[in-house]
Structure formats: structure tokens, C-alpha cells
Image 1 (cartoon, one colour):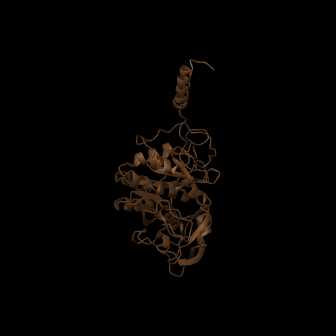
Image 2 (cartoon, helix red, strand yellow):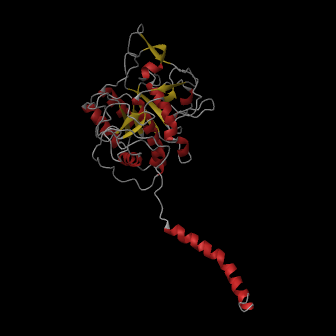
Image 3 (cartoon, one colour):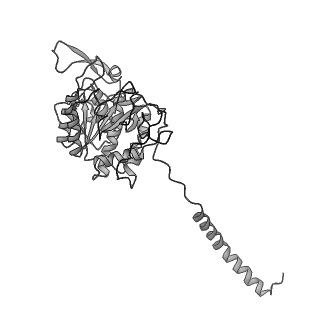
Length: 375
């Protein structure tokens, strides 16, 4: 999990006695390797000529976000009481969403024009996964919606729901916020919340082969995105640029989708939350069976197609029959264009040939007549 990958330094856990200390996240260094597979799959640079997500606010509901990472400075992280992060998950997710490009690193966020609002719903801890409590997650979602966040990213899902959490999701959708949450269950019948609630974009993590990382499955799974071997911004950078990489945590898969939603809403500002879901699911690269999969949902995120495709703003696709879980090869870009009919091209080529032969034939006829067709 991310916690074991990020723990290096030391800090005092919020809400505990000062004498009780926990290990906090710290950078492994500055990421200078070739662009990671997760970024290549999303390919945000292809979308940036259309939009960088400017004008969008992505609320990261998690463990807080460390304001001390330089790629999240300069207005990327909105002021707030939760701009600290011992655990590191919130900072990592915020970087995937909106870290600014910098010449010292090959890592940058998918929507660097967007801004991040940090909302803590789980305490920083090294005792296990940073899991949110239903009512704490509910309170953060409500604050995010009331603050005008166009996208609400939940990276500390909970294993159970509550009336408050269900009401918070309904409130956010009514306020025109898109709620994106991760699927992290380790059993097929597990349920992650708010991912399993109606209207939420439920994202499952995949590895580089396209195999789902969590075991959770069901009709609530919407789409798949990278959830293993990830690079991202680290907490504890102390005002400098710092990263962790090689991180495996399916809870972070929702960050790529939330960033794509920020790009989409910036480029197409009139879309409703349900229309955003339509675009994500309709353009996803389908599983091998060609239909919805119980573990992969409608398929792997295709960010460029979700933003740029035309004629997709109708109702979301209805749930079809679920198939046995399988693998899917991540796509580098939008689906191929459909084959074009050959007849128009053949006729055009024939016209060119006829035009090219017309002048020589006319000359031959004139000379033949002058010679009265003698050799």
C-alpha cells in the first residue's frame, strides 16, 4: 500500500497527544526517469492544446495535501486548514491531478490548469490504510460541493455507507459536482463507498498489463485507470520538488479519472454530472469481451476521446450483462477511425488517370488526321 511506500520521516499525528509520533511521508527524490506508463496511457499533453483544466477546482477528499511541495505551489493549492499531510496519499493524488510542469522533473499533473482544494477525511497513520469513516467522508464531500468544487475526488474510501454519506453524494450531484471515488475491496463481494452509491464514478485500478488490482467487482464499477507502479508528488518536500514512484495503491486510480473530468468540464462547461459519466464510459477502451465487465466496468480510461469526441452527450449507457473478469490492453489514444468505403476513392483515382491521358490522346488524334492515319 501507499503508506509503506511513503513512510520515511517523522511527524505528530493530528488529534493525538504530542508525545505520540508517527512516521510521515518524505520524498524519495526528484523523478527524472522517462514518463511513466500511467501518464503515457492518459497522454495529457495531447489534450493540453484543447484545455489544461483552467477554471476548475478539484477537491481531494483524503489525508490533506502538503502545501510544501513546489509543484503544488503558486496558487495550485487553495488556502485551507487541511494543507498538511503526514500520510502522503492526498498529496500524491493532488499531484496526479494538478502538479505544474517543471524542467527539473518529467512528472507533471494531468490537469495543471486546475486548482486543488484539500479536505481531510482520514487521519495520517502508519498502522494501516488511511480509510475514511462514512460520516467524515460525507462532511468533506458536502464542504467540497458547497465550496463550488466541480470535481470531488475521494481517495480515502470507506467500507460501509451511512445515511449522511448517501445524502452528501446526492447533495453534491445536485450542486453540479462530479464525484469520483476508488474501488479498493480485496474480495469480489466487497463494496467501497462512496464508489458504490448511485451517480458516483467508481474507478478500479489496473496494472500495466490491464489486470485489475483490487478484487472488488459488481455493476457499480464504472471505469478502470492506472493503480500500480505510479509516480506522484510527495509530502514532506519542505518547499522543494519531491516525488515517490513505483507506488501501488488502487485508491489512487481515481485521481487520473478526476483530472480527466477537470479537463472535460473546462472544455465543455455545460455538461451535467450524468453527461460526464456518459463520456467517460462511452469512450472507454472496452474489455476483450466488448461488453461491460464486473471488475473493469466499461473499460480503460480514454482521456483524449472523453474530452474531444462529439455527439456523446446523451444518457449514460445502461448496464449490460456482466462478463467474467479479464484483462485489457491499455490504449495510447482514442479508438481508431472506422474504415472508409473504397468506391469513392477508386472513382477519384480513375478521374485523375483519365485527366492525365486526355492531352496525349488528343494530340495523337490530331496527328493521325493530319497524316490521314498513315504510319
